[in-house]
Length: 443
Ligand code: PLP
Image (cartoon, rainbow, N blue to C red; front, side):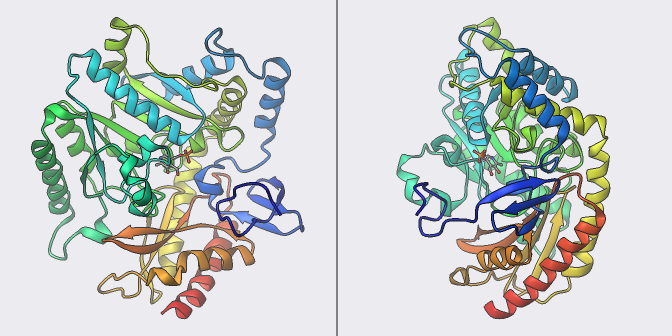
């Protein structure tokens, strides 16, 4: 019996024994194609020699030094790299150990900005329904995934909430994309007015939403509208790119494709590609300068911030992505994946939508394609699909999100950027067979 508190308290998962490239091998010798990069983490695949070399070198010279005493070359260089490649005035970086910590940091930084700019009455945020920002209490509070929030709701701060941008689900039949976008922006503006702009610190959103709805890109003009409203009413715009950032969508930051620059950006998974636990918060001069010229400190900190070994791994990952021009590869392979998903799956009886951006793709399953009714959650269709794919040696990331209070089933595909077209064919073909078999059972 395992003494670890695993995700399931009843089932111990197989033991991962080794991994190379897009493949993970378990202790029995069975190989799995890692088409989800874990949870959109392994952007370079496994065992990349350049990252391993950088890690070894860092561990041999300086594995750890506490930030109360020192900085390190690895963390400084990673910050330089992130600032050089970020648009606008995102010129400062805070390093943490993962996505939830990055979101907590962003929330606290935004609050401190308000305090130091003479707006202490700003105490709340606007988040979106059907969103996920992490499992710690602050992140859970701004997130809108009811299933994850429910039993912890009494512990969470109050957050105002607006609809997510999900054209497949919410655009009305007689509405154009532009009209739908305007409706969402009107709703956001009304929520700001109802809540009182003077009380709101900022608006928090995933650029391409991942864990709750399965790679749903925003409509054209949505984030440009968000940016305008945040400026108009004095709200900070916080982009959570923990899952969709760091090249996953074909640009380093997903928001670059929406022609906006947020005030604060969280990144994590693809930053270190799974070689080390690391997350980061990119911060604009607009937010940092008042703190630099004010208290001169950010009232925050963890033992492992700026961890040199984690920074060295992330720096190597980001250098390989840049050197090998992997963003353009993500665009190409991503287009191919989306095309194939559409061609092979969209026509199936229970596939409601195929969508995504770059190598961040989602498939939504519905009981009825006309009404878009979700399958009965009791079927746990997403879990059945995950198991059936694993049996066939394929890792995808299925989940049940919340649609109008119902669980809906999605499959997220987020393979390493180095994946080959023939491997993408295997992903699509395997998924097709599994979807046909499992939806037939659930229907
Ligand atoms: N934010 C987003 C958008 C995420 O998708 C996730 C994790 O899936 C998180 C935050 C939390 O990250 P972590 O699991 O590293 O704490």
